[in-house]
Image (cartoon, rainbow, N blue to C red; front, side, top):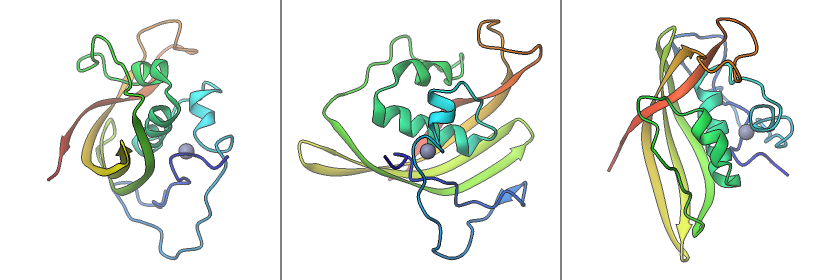
Length: 156
Ligand SMILES: [Zn+2]
């Protein structure tokens, strides 16, 4: 299956501060195994905030509550996260990816979904922070760093 996130990233990895969309429309979608499965199923760390954001979207689509919990910053993580089954996710569009500091980044996106056949869009600017992993079960190496979702501002 194609990756739910619609990847790969459409942002150039050459520019570090404000990542610009790659021009042209010859970007093909990739399979889940080549994209977010690396993070959801194979234990890799998302290398930047956009990759984490995409993988979390895929986790919402696939109902992976454990992954959402594991990638949520401890300061803002909900006590109990439950996904609403009636939400049917339709697609993700990443609008902007800004890395303001080496350990802080923002990703603006639009996610479309349906509930009871009615279409909605979520337009959010999410904040991400990179931190050292504390849980020794999660960290494979000493001082291993990982990106976490902190919170977001919703537009409209
Ligand atoms: Zn993906």
